[in-house]
Length: 315
Image (cartoon, rainbow, N blue to C red; front, top):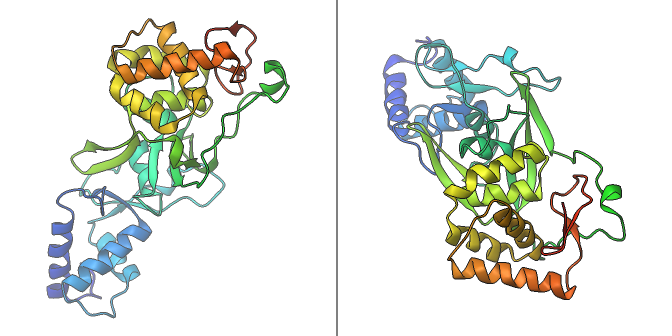
């Protein structure tokens, strides 16, 4: 116990902190791992509620918490990036701190409510891949007043357009030799977001299984590449909820998403009785047949040459 804060005051602060850390909530989704900024804010809030002196700073409260061995910093040496490693603290008493990729992504973001775990990290959570982790992703959300338009080949051949791995976003850091990225995503293209309880101490916003499968087709390199995409669809289709899948496609409202999804459903012999999904697939085929939509690759930025005439896709 630090001498800087009287014992009675510190006891009151700790009682309020313990109360706040009982269960994760929308305001505090992780009660075990917090960034230095969020932990200092939390300590100031509980100190105020405990009628502690207003002269106590967040820095002093955090230092006292660490000195009392009630908080342990994630070892900075585990970050191998040239950039400054984030200061993340565990509020679990005893043992060596260990943190999951999802918790690490969540803890490093300034806003819990405006971020979503996605791409390869979501594939892993939904158990859609057995591949070794190439990277982890969290998205910050933006709203647009205009619906984003489907990509076109603009006169290029698929080979000319396919230039390899596209941008993965902004690298946050490397942790235990795995890169972590943040990317800005359009809210209009990701209606499938859910809150998932990943442990007794943590809940997180993440793409649903259905949204994750669509993301794999839209951004294959962010999801680990073509082999991972096909594995994810093969593993995911038996778990797919057709109504939720149809809702995602209708909300996105883009035929290129539906055509890519339709090809994959057909490829893995997935039959559906959902009327909305059947209508979407039929409409997409009609648009291809009438020439109302351009021919596009199944996977953006992946070399493709064989034309599938049913869906208007280069495979």
